[in-house]
Length: 408
Ligand code: ZN
Image (tube, rainbow, N blue to C red; front, side, top):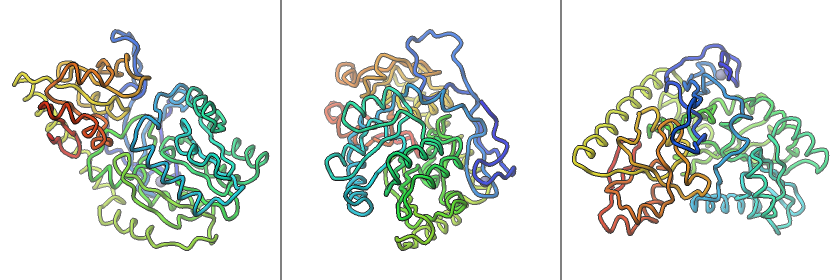
């Protein structure tokens, strides 16, 4: 664990701490039993760089501790499968001609690259979690079980040539050494290659009070401003950016070497202007965010306590990492939430870190019929409510916690 004293993008020491979520266990360190002793917890607080605008954690847990036996499988979600299929189609159509190399960083179980099998491109995944890389390889998606860095990137370029497309979805926030990643990208990307980076967007997190997306694995929370700075430092540019509605609001940035073939769309300027208007480039906005988190806590605890007072039974839906930030910071334990359920077989049978709620299979909802389901995996609310239509028909209700607790 190391304390961040200088901005991890621009090196400035002008870091403003605006949110302190106390000390919590790692959000994906689910427990095998409810009575584990000596569960580790780590400080979780957030800084704003007044120089480049990067919002980042104040303490960093080494990635080796976080990602070696990871239990987030992208393929578990219908929404994400569809999202990646459409991105894969776009890459094939716009950026990766026959025979070209497509590399995906943090390729998970191959959920995206699978869509490119048999399409005439060479694909390679790079995935640090051993168990997940094994699943991808078994499915026919060649995957290196490595962290992507300047060393692995140079090795790939040497053995397979440079890549026409480098994809990095939902991983940028996890990278401790962004400069080393950029050096790797520089070594791997062809001169007319394109990197596509998807990362949860700070403007969405801010606006929708998605504070629970803050946990130790997410080392940074990106607006466009620090990304422009970072790529610029390596003679690269974001030539287009789109807002996409996954993970509570994400941006997809299209990056190329400065002056390469793709014409800039003007979208970067628009988002910069939007961020400025929202105040995201100055620290006052972050004080407001911290106050918003406090009101959210009052609202949600007020609601759960009221329901308990009325004798209602409440369970959780989903056991996502973010759920553990919310449960731990708001001190929502078994007194307020009986258990949670999850579709992932890797989580069923375990207990949530810190709060120690049992995680059951989703079939428990059908057999047990709690009165309310607090949707911890709120980024999949629509999907969950659709799948649980029979629960809803029999009178079950859902609570969506952010931006304000809402019963549907
Ligand atoms: Zn900075």
